[in-house]
Image (cartoon, rainbow over all chains, first blue to last red; front, side, top):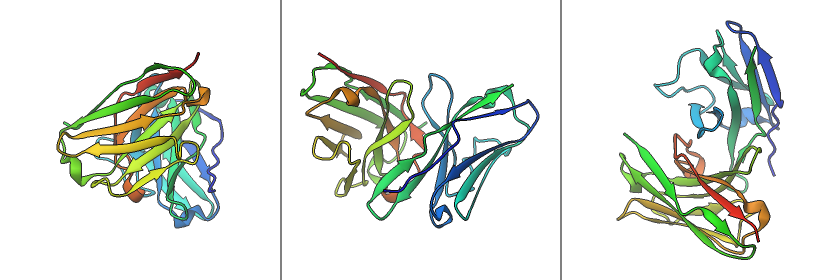
Length: 108
Length: 119
């Protein structure tokens, strides 16, 4: 089965840029979604189809996908960005959704 | 406004059954796939099951295949998850999500309902 690998934690100072990675075999051939989950809340879709952004999501959040790594980039990090972030792909070989283990973003 | 409201969570005994429901509003329900995703205490997100808009196509995680059944009533804009042969490891918050039908993003999520499996 397909596996997505995310670093457990990333720390960044306010105003800096955070790069959250999601590794998977030839992931560039799949569409990647990213979800933000703040403490005690439901997940929110922040990036879909690798780099598209729902209208309510700020432009500071962007996505890319190349080779074996997809990346969620958060520019000018704010305290409100502190959350868990999950990547997700559809594995068409067995019609399963796959989530990465999640990355906890800490704003210092 | 798109809204999803889950219900039906609670305490169940190992080997028992439980039925979750998700009431949808604010969108054309039958036009969208729907999904269930769970989160065990202190753990990450785990996909459970998805259904196409018509309900004709359904998909299950290996961990629940044969024990859980996803269904939908498009006349009542309601998604259901019937869970049987419950195990302790099924203990989680269960989220209903709009989307997830054959690769479509899950763009709206409910607040979740808690299932606890314990004797």
